[in-house]
Length: 273
Length: 273
Image (cartoon, each protein chain N blue to C red):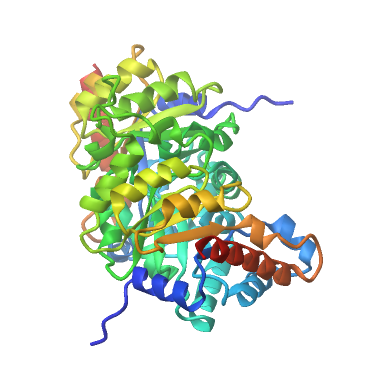
């Protein structure tokens, strides 16, 4: 019997090997890809081929595939990453959330059909609805905590009668209740450095997925300052549009994407130095 | 120019025409369908044909299709309902929730690709992430409020510093902030009659989608008592497994499903009489 390494270990190894905290979000937009003279599969493979030694993970975003009925392209690119770049984990960004018997089906979809190494989930329905995902102990379950959008505070920053804010309660539940298999991560937007600091204080070394460092304008320096764990890692910095569409038009889109990755990685290395 | 009737009007007409508050959830399970000697498409069409004059809506559940890579069957059954039984609306139960630019893709998926009349969404990310759905003013946006699962209170019943519970705040936001186009509905599980009464008190006549009256054991009488609006409607009673799989084995599954619908409808009519 072989012990399969868990998602968090695989992620840490990829971060070390490529000296990168960067996750490239795969959010294909047909109208932009058309500018590059390639089809969807060609676009995604070229991006992955050009960036695979610059990243610690890929994060395909489900809606961008589903809106264009491209589930087969989603299956193919995940399979391609696993085959061509083993050791680079894939986080399916689908933000699933449903009652237990249905959550089982979503877990089958993410981990069976798509063979993702981790999936993003929504905590609003409560911990019993996360259990079907958490039971895949070698997979990562990335729970929304404080999201990057401008209006995320409408619910997430509500103050409870205990004085805690809702996102802080989610962080505490994640750390203390839901993580018995050690496979929970949290999403905290790069647009909220103060909230990031609070989450880091609550969850210890738990890895945090940080969207919003690219097109959404999140501050890299503030993210590192407030988000790094005590031993200097624990962050997955995710950028999508600013990398995928770094090229204006024309055939050098993949090269431009790689340069955009290198720029972020160098900036992070400078800040960590 | 034709004014297209909104989802809530279409729903109300279907409820009147069929004298039914019942929504049949389409949650196909391959292992159960195999017992009936039909394929997936045949199963779904037979269920719809047998029940279309007994229901006010259908609610296909996304995960059950996605787990078996059956998106084309999902497209087909929605198209079939629209063509064969116009006037019976389809609620895509997908519980979407993502930041604005991605929510636009999910809205495209639900309303464009699948041509659903309404979609379920998760409020955890805040109202700005619901806007891309709400802008489809002729479509229904069914926001999770108090879900039917046993652990739904872990977040949803948290008490805020105002004394409100989180699900009550969601109900209030839905009624007062998010419903400017008049196309918002809420999900409240039949398993929580007291919470249902609170939501009804907050949202006035807003229609409520009530899952959990079948296999999950929700109480019909309590649901009607606490959930009906002042003018005696405003409820969509959703059952899935208890109808789809009412037949044990064999070819009479559709007839058994129809009988299960009739039983619920008669019980509701008795209670309302």
